[in-house]
Length: 485
Image (cartoon, rainbow, N blue to C red; front, side):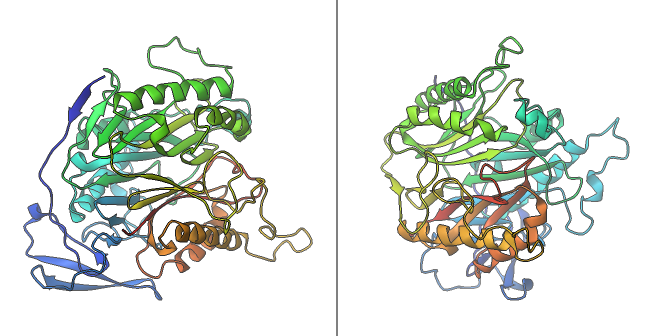
């Protein structure tokens, strides 16, 4: 199927000073810029005002990660960057509808829920902040966005419903979709939308994180229909395919109820293969897979099918359990990042004996060009068990810090994988962090932040609807790192 649309717009102005970056778009007309001076010991920000024509020494590596700190977007309370730019790629941290003073920003709490949707108000607030952040990074949000994640909160499914194969989050997200269309035109970025149990801000209903590529090239959409114009987009060397499920629009309701995880995984991969072909690539060019698996007991069945489709050199992969899926009867959702056929970039599987071998069918990481896509990280052994020393013992129920211990274990492994790939831990640019319980959040992020004295990666932190795949694991990381030339 041919392309369904393209985007091309003028670029904004990026201001860079050292490794901490702030800026305003050229349209803002401001003759000054704000530089954020970050003290990694105290976690505080100092502020300088400088003329935009002030000369600065060139960076040793012009593509190395820099922090993007928009001057008029609320500053996060935790140790992460609102966005990180590395080369032409910009990784925006999970955005919430908060002013970091009152929890939820007062303007997103409806006075009358019969006439206004909190989800829609949150979405509008977040997209305005996203646009400001992209402007500061020299991006056009509409043109340059290639990948977007939407995380919705819901008390459903319950654990019993997950175990029974019911992934229904009982949500209506129409208000979000309306808001998104106000800010993103077709072809919109490849998307994943799932429900989780809780976000970092109490009572928040939505978090969004985004990747854009600010190289001035348009994105081209593929494989669409009237209901979904472009589930796949191609941007230069890269193809991004939205999260797909087995049920299709127009199918008889209930068609997939009771079907096996093997049948559903196979059906999703068939769909992905067809879309990849339409966009000028194939599944053997897959670099990274995001798999959303409501029932972790389906992991083995999913992995069995995965081995058939990817017998050699599978993509990096993260499998996120206990999430809700909106399609009736769906048991798995899969999104892919692929390299386009004809690209001169090489796909390299990364393996090191200094970190545990994955316990399922994915490599430790995959490197393409200037980026390293790591597979899921947990405090696990190669057999899929929790590593020793990661839990408190029953005889001493208050001794130890499992959140700290598990994060430290993962950071050691990530550092080894990064080193093997020719980069370093400090060059991680994006993380998604999944907790089984938010009691581990503060311990975990304190340990995490200690490993990043300079640029803090863009971050999204979520609480899932139940335990992780590895019993006893309290945290899972999904990471991307920059690799210098």
